Image 1: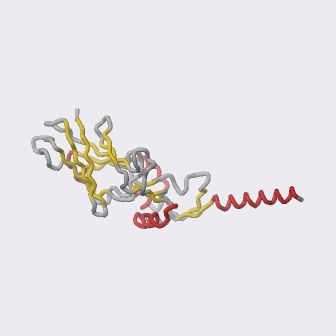
Image 2 (image 1 turned 120 degrees about the vertical axis):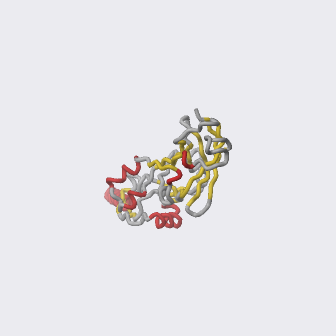
Image 3 (image 1 turned 45 degrees about the vertical axis):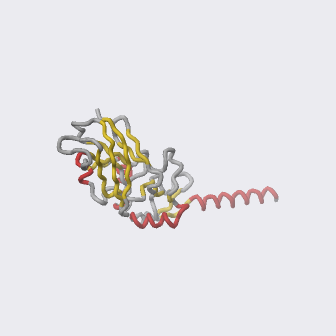
Length: 218
């Protein structure tokens, strides 16, 4: 009798685990990173890399996932990630995905230097026409109604856009990675080689963020 009770208890426990293993979700995106703890660094190719979530990736004060349902829902509505509508195995695979994104949109980017870039662009003039931004975005996948032929393409495809051609909505749903996006010179300087660049990002809430980097071009 005792053995039978133990067996029944185990079966009930297993059934309970199976019920909690599968969960319905109307959202695909795993979480949203805000601008907190943003920083830049310059790589060996003079690419200016933008990181979020702090230098170790684990001190991000404003990261919203299912544990922060109220703010998560605000961002899901903002970006249209509300009709995934699937049952997911939340134990044996990431739930609902492994894809986190930036919670803001960079609508424009400008760059000025403390030194002359060329004969027509001296210190303090906009250098946007000489730089491009490189990023990945999950927007096409979300907009498609979760067309899984597009999923891996979006995750692996880097988009490159000249700064002076960047549209307000181009950097929507930029994928969080290390780095999340990069800025680099498409036309190198012809006068001064060492530059202290001030990069101004305008976000979709109207705020601006400045980053200053020093680069010596070859």
